[in-house]
Length: 223
Image 1 (cartoon, rainbow, N blue to C red):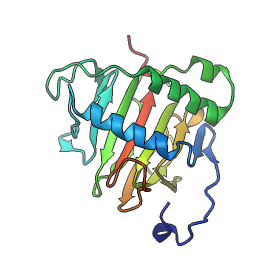
Image 2 (cartoon, rainbow, N blue to C red; image 1 turned 180 degrees about the vertical axis):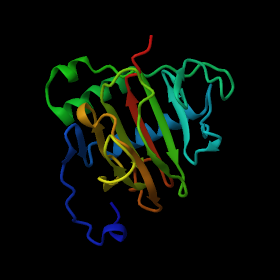
Image 3 (cartoon, helix red, strand yellow; image 1 turned 60 degrees about the horizontal axis):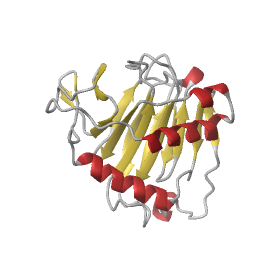
């Protein structure tokens, strides 16, 4: 983490449960793991479906997304990227499915939820220095299994709210490179968004010099 951002390089960032089912685990990924994920992102971005900015209600998002397993386009999932080039997206790697189970176990401890967790899609978002994401719910999935979020690169200001509206109550926290955030159970449909990113905060060795990669693993519940 950048001392310029926090004013104290030794500032503790404890593990926290923001709300029932919503758990933040700082520094879960090692630098080596972060760099490896950044390299995989470059491979995924080479195609067959390139990263694209999805259009929501006629407005193009500032975030660019490449999908694995299933292709997300606003309000639905498809196997082929019919809104990009019609190509079938890459499959979700087995290692990423295993990471998802490890992440849920880290957040919730041993449980039936962990044993049954089998993500079948990943939305891999890239944020440049000006990108953000407005408050929204992840509700295009049939399944309400937990969402797993992994961060690599620049830090961001993440807003996590309630399940009823985009208004308060919500809480702002910094997600840094290597952080894990899991939300499921009562928090599964909470509104959340990225208010801004902090340029120059990516740690040396994470595999990114600029920007932020965010991987969200989900269970679509689709066949």
